[in-house]
View 1: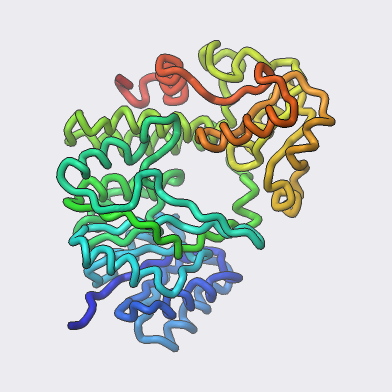
View 2: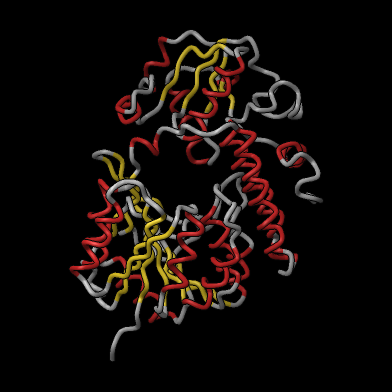
Length: 409
C-alpha cells in the first residue's frame, strides 16, 4: 500500500549558506512520499535561485515566490499550497536526520494519533545537545490527553512547559493543523510557533509523544546574539500573542487550566525578553526577584542565553547597575560570537555583592546554584527568578499594561 503524502513546508529568507543542506536532508528521507514546498518570502539574497535550481532537479519540490510578509504569512502560503495528509515544517537553516519523518509517521500509524511530537537536537558549533519534551513519551488519549492539556504550556514549575512550543518537531494530521495555522495573526512576530501549535493540539483526539531527536536545530552565531528591538516593541508583539491565545482558549473547559498555564508561560517569556529588569525603576512589585536587591551593587551574571543577554543589556542601558562579571558553561561558544563571557570557575576571582542566575527553568537554576555553592559562594548572595503566585500575577499585569489581558485569575 502506498504511504500517504507528507507535505514539508520550508519558509525561506536570508539563509543561502545553509538552505541547500536543509533541502537535501529532506529529499534524502527514508520516507519518500514527500512533497517539499519552499516558500521564498521575498528573500533578497540568492535563496530564490537556490529554490528554483533544486525544483528543476526534483519533481517533488514546489517553489512559491512571494513578497516579504514574515514567517506566519510564509507558513500560511505553504500550507495552502500543500496536498499532504500530514503536514510538517522545517526551518530553512536546520536539517533533519534521514529517518525523521519515517519515525514520526510510524508512531502515528501504530498509535492512530493525530500528531507525533519529537524532541530535537540543538547543534551549536561542534556540540549537540538532545532536548526532550517534559511530558514522557507515549500515546495520550481520553483522560491522559486531558492531563496533557493541563500541562502542555506549564507543567507545575515556573516556565517549564510540558510540550515544546516548536512547530518544526511535530508531524500533524492535516485537518488538525490547517485552520490553526491559518488563524494565526500575521502580526505575531514572537511566539509564532506557539500560536499554531497549542490550538492545533487541542483539536487532536490522540497525541503521540516520542523521543525522536533527529531534528537538528542549528543555532547560528547571529541567532545566538540577541540583537533585539526595544522591549516596548517586543512587549507589544507579546501582548498580541497573549490576546490571540486567550481568545483561542476561551471555548475549552476550565479544568484544562489553559488560562493559568498561559499566564505562567507568558510571564516567563516577558521576563526573558525584558531581562527581568524593565520594571526595576518601580513598575514591578517590590517583592519581585531582583527588584530591590541589586541597585548600586556589584553584580555577576551567570547565563549568556537570551535571558542573560537581555539582562546584561537592560542593566547596562539603565546605568544604575554595576556588572563585574559574566559567566556561562558554554563560554567558548559565546566568545566566538564576541561576547565577553568567562568560564564558571573564574567567578571565584570576581568581587561581587550578588550573583544573578539568568535562567528560568528549574533544572538550569538548580545546576547553576549547585555549582556556585561548590565554588564556595554564599547562598544568600545567589539570586534567581522564583516569584510566588501573587507576585507573578502582579508582574504579569504590569507587563500587559494591566488591562491588555483582562482578568488574570
